[in-house]
Length: 371
Ligand code: SF4
Image (cartoon, rainbow, N blue to C red):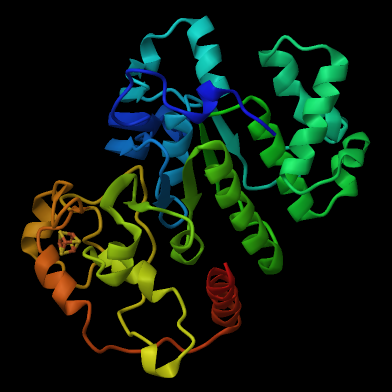
């Protein structure tokens, strides 16, 4: 598939990040409870400033409830922020006309976690993939069919698949259809919202590789939302780690894996299994549950689970500040934590889930070596 020149290169004169959030918050008001008492709002995203660089793959990582998917949807203008601004190519999305927003929607596409739920079961693959072309481009039916066939080939499917329906495909093939649909509007940035977590382990690596190939082929910028670090290690340039609606660490992927500065990042690292006994690190595995986003802890939001917490942490919120180089971390004691993180601690006992993650991680390692 050949995309127009404008899709492959930044628009002339445009510098800086392609997409940016400035002090963005997204709060959801709760329903009124018994006795008509109003519940506090759910603070899904809180005061997040983040710049997505042109052409990079940025991963948003965190547990369920960390706000990563909500932030992704706010960045794509699928949800309006409660406060703050989202800037795309230098333009504030909150100030755009409906017509200008239509163009932005074409430029910013999403791939959903569940490929089956995101595809209309009553529409053929040709109609699903061809819909954005019909909406955004002035083409006749024959030209549209040719473009759909080309898109299907691009994502590793056959043109004949266009006449079939989503239920006739495997999970991996359905995700490829979702990717073809996202590509159909000639986007500049694609957000993958847990794009492989609903797929079999054997298929996950294929879809990851496909996304990487397409990124280079079409000069795309990728934002990948993921709850684990193993998947994103092999496909991202930078990682933003989120906890309870806030970014706690932002770093280039290699630096983050080599020396995680924040205790939460260290705990996420500890959840990645390592196969060789001599290489097994033993940082503490994260315990306890994430506090309610309706009533987040005072000071540092992580202090209720942090093994390094001190009195200051309960009272004063640590800002996301520059650490080393371009790394940013939100922790009062990140230097000590980073040094302590290399210490010798316990190794988690293998379980079924642990073994499954081990296989996944090793399959990525193998693919990475082959590639
Ligand atoms: Fe832990 Fe304190 Fe750092 Fe928060 S500020 S991550 S509680 S050490």
